[in-house]
Image 1 (cartoon, helix red, strand yellow):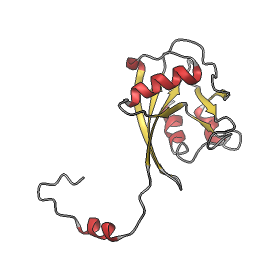
Image 2 (cartoon, one colour; image 1 turned 180 degrees about the horizontal axis):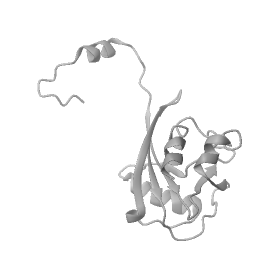
Image 3 (cartoon, helix red, strand yellow; image 1 turned 90 degrees about the vertical axis):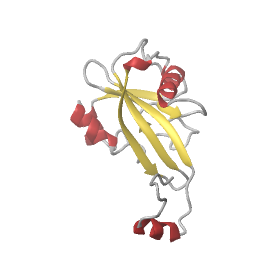
Length: 159
């Protein structure tokens, strides 16, 4: 959507509009980084039968119609890990924007240091508490989807 009052295209916009680049479906996902008292973060391994099975990721899921990203995180953390999070405990951190061959992923990532319950996998996935620096150094031990990789240095620098 062009918000300029005159609605004219800039030269680079005219050029881009002439390219026949197929647009990919946009998938909106929200995820959360649980951070424990020792500065470790929780990651979950995608179970067999799901896309990108075996890769480790920050827990979360697709944003449903009419749902805000915060609501998605709260719902998904309850469904996937059996923990309760209050919206006030979610801090927006960063977002990932990544094109996969079949779709484009847009994922806001939230930080959370307070929750109720002990994380317990509910969907057959494995979980691990890992220091962000170890995620960067042990990428073969914790392989992650391409969209998550740029987030790791930022987490490492934060924690």
